Length: 266
Image (cartoon, rainbow, N blue to C red; front, side):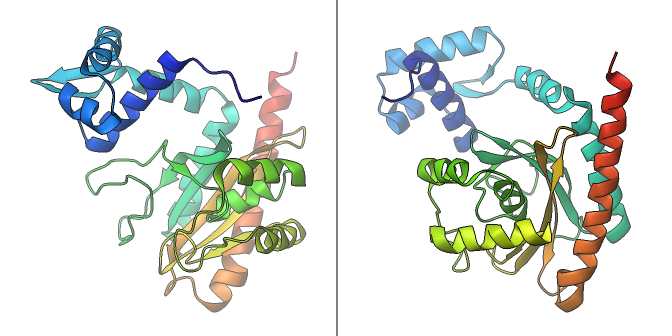
């Protein structure tokens, strides 16, 4: 038996995502894109507009700023997320590379905090445009990024199977792992070493080093990755130096999270 969902809500969410994907859209464009009746589109648009989740400029509808409040609430709800943000910024300042903090959401990875390297030539995130101030909130598949592998390695095998059943192993590049057995072998290695690597598996020419971040009860909060071009992530820097730095910094972060947890206890 499949999951029970509200079709009306699903349609509203699909309309919102389509508007964002298109960079704004008219009711006619949405009807054509989604194959819905224009009258149905107008009902959803009117409700979303009235509640501040859309804004209208001429005939075009755009995502409204009310989502900003929800997103910032979600990012600040856990004190550990703020501590992770500080760690991301500290690591990036120390090594002048891109650093990300990702958590599992809907069996994918969602980018919560990033420190984007100003000299990066890689637009590595889905739907990332040069004029965007941040890529926060975008989704990754978990099998082809270092943060995702670090998270998957901490899950029971049946949970990993559920993730793969839902999302598959889509190929992002020629180097992406697309076979389950190969992925499970790599996840075993990640568990042993405590570090996840990707080598041009998400974007050609890009390497990543990732490590999971745990909460005091042992559950996985998310993962942090250091990301950069292959020519800067070569030999020992990729295999030894950056992993050692990441282990130390994540250990410090987990200690800080535990201290905050102890302080909040009655």
